[in-house]
Amino acid sequence: MRPPRAPRKGDLVLVRWRDASGVLTRTAGQPDAADPAEHLEAETVGWISKRTRANLYVSSERLPPGYADQYRGTTRIPVGWIKDTIRIA
Image (tube, rainbow, N blue to C red; front, side, top):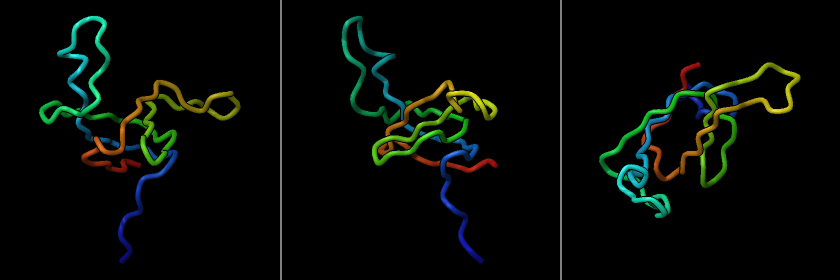
């Protein structure tokens, strides 16, 4: 029996990841946090629209063929912050 394949572009996924706490704790004018927070776990559901060595892009909307952009509502997740990626369909 073959192991399940890793999720790839176009797959519907649930991504569990450590989000940055910077937006919750910073004051106006300070940049976003550069490191993930140990205590702030996020879950993002959507289609993988792009994958690079550094980031996974998960989009909440997928448009039908014929549109200039195939995906919208995209979240960029740094690969090092990802705890788990589960393929839904």
